[in-house]
Length: 488
Image 1 (cartoon, rainbow, N blue to C red):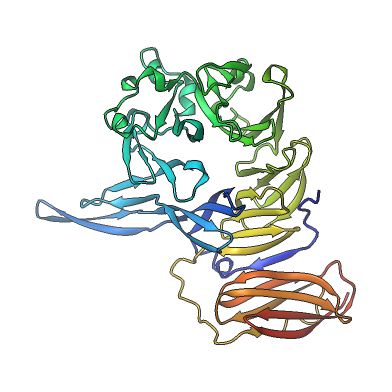
Image 2 (tube, rainbow, N blue to C red):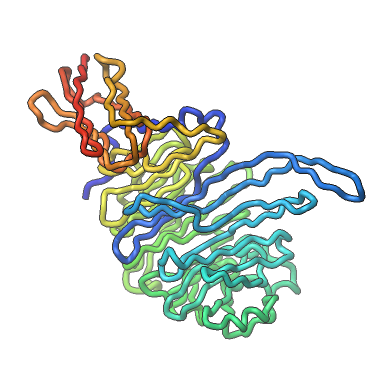
């Protein structure tokens, strides 16, 4: 299978990059899934700080204070329609006395992988002593007796949400007397709303809805299978959490960790899954591990292997190719690495100007989506194309050209890179292609819907021979061609 080797250096320059030094807005946390039609649905956050002053009156006096009512909304991008919109709101509101009231989404999921049915858990403002809020797609809101839950999963077979307590309560372990609220998960049956309106604390929930270990993940292809943590061990359940078996005993003691957080990367329908944990090691900076298991017949015969990847890096993002479970994509700051042997060896395939903040690999394809602080890229056959740019704070709307226009590349002649600009009078499907003088296509630079305005492409011809080439723009029924000269 072809891998996403970066053999062509193609840099998409967006208007957001021009002002990156002064733009406080940035993208982060990319995720996605394939819907029933095979269309990729992507989700990402955009952080927008809004520093300002706020005034209020009390007892006849006027007070002014500085506040930071940021936005960190979750956006949905339909890759087929090339349209995005806010799907879940994460932000800070101001009270009449200028108090900052956060509405922070701790975790979210979608019922049956349907974009129209999001469910989110909003973090408690009272820390571990409070309770969190669960909000469903039909605008039902419930208080749940866990402060800042670790995870949220949907179990289709029982039409239930699976909500997990915070992982650091497991690691640190609470004092005796509070143990009833720890190391547990509970089921939220979506057809029993009246029941959940009456419950406010863990001890109020019926035992039939409690699971005695912290569920980390529900397997998509068989959602009776849960993986989780119990005491200090990693456990597996084949019966929706009613019983469990230990697959790694004394898991925490073996890894000598503090403040660990875990994220399962389950691969349907393959009997392979990864377990990622980010660990703060005492005196050794920050590192991330990938702990993976391969199931041969049953978990009694499984083999576990630990791999420490790119130690002392804080900014890893990971995506698994679900159609090839041994294929792993990992980012480290601005670089993207690829492994085709379960993470045993890694090779660098991409590098960006900005920090990579998210990855999503589309199954059964050569497409990798890469989110940086400034752009969302679609990488196909090793070529990254920016499909979304972060808005520049306080940026004036660009002047829209009144016609399609292809500009002369600069510099020209060049060696080995040159910049090509073209203008579009409206957002439209666009192709920008390089040919040799015999009319043979040597490089496809753009083949997608591009926004109205000035678009800039930096073309690297490092692998081409010296000579004259033609570059052709096709957009909105207009075709324009110009010459460029490569001299080495």
